[in-house]
Amino acid sequence: MADIPAPDLPFRPAGLVNRLVASARFQALCARVPGLRTIARREGAALFDLMQGFVQSQMLMALVELRILHLLADGPATAAVLAPRCGVPPERLQILLQAGAAMRLLKRRGDRFALARRGTALLTVPGLQDMVRHHDVLYRDLADPVAFIRGGTTTELADFWPYVFGAKGAMDPAQTARYSRLMAESQSLVAAEALGHLSLKGAHKLLDVGGGTGVFLRAVRARYPKLQLALFDLPDVVAQAALPADIARHGGSFRTDPLPQGADVISLVRVLYDHSDDTVRALLAKAFAALPPAGRVLIIEPMSGGTRPDPQTDVYFSVYTLAMQTGQTRSAARIAELLREAGFNEISKEHADIPFITCVLTASKPQPAG
Image (cartoon, rainbow, N blue to C red):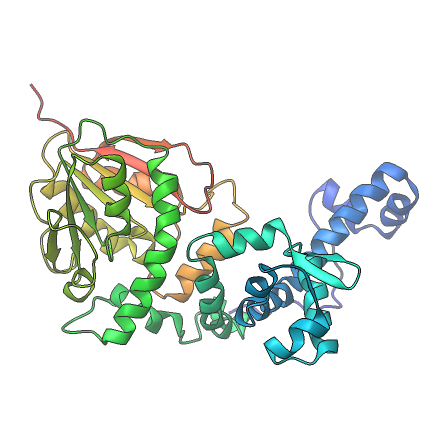
């Protein structure tokens, strides 16, 4: 493995623009020229934000754990008033509140702090607070980022989502309930975003594979009340699904069991990015086999920007799935390749308003020639 260059080695970046930016004389010029000075300051602030990102995340977690946002939902308050309720000395709580205001989660008016629009959104977006609390696992996995990237660490996140390795037999009920709750609370936002950009008109029956406790199916039922629905997931997970009696439940593992027949649409909501290419290939082959000619498969999950790196999916989701040790955040183009390998055609990417929440790919099983 190549050694990392020593910091005192000469730095000669490639490219004219990069050489200019690295030049002390050009930096001094930027500091004097108004237009260039604005750009330089903006870039400097962006670099500092990258450096302080972990601190911001930890202060966000403190705001959530101490329920500061909940307390301020009742109205503005000072640090002195909130301190006894949070169990934090007023002078230290003042620093946290000031940080929250700087992150635009709170707003300050004199000595009092109030909930800002961004903080209100954090309280109301389904599953977001639980994801913030859950990040302590990911942060511990990233304590040594170099060792993590080199693959020299064993991650806690892999244990948090044990189903990705192929659960066998009965799972710990507490563990099952924990990840099922986290999936359910975040999946309602995913379902709303996906269903806002794809149509299930004309479909006869939808099978949701790996659908957890049925959040996506409940969202589908609300929009398409006459569509037949079915859920396929691990038996312990399916048992917790709060679904109407007419929605079929199938317990099993797509690693070892065939998918149920009879659906003309199969949905895979945040499933592929949990798994390796080999597992995905096998799953798509089973979906292809289970569908009738002209049947459709829906791939619904965050996707990499591919040749145009995305600031959310290619940082957060790509690292998260890497920490899971089995997953991979793929681009739409890469997923399309895997779909074509399985035999699907008519592959299209639907519009997404919030791509870091989810993107949607649809593909069809060809009809026999002639």
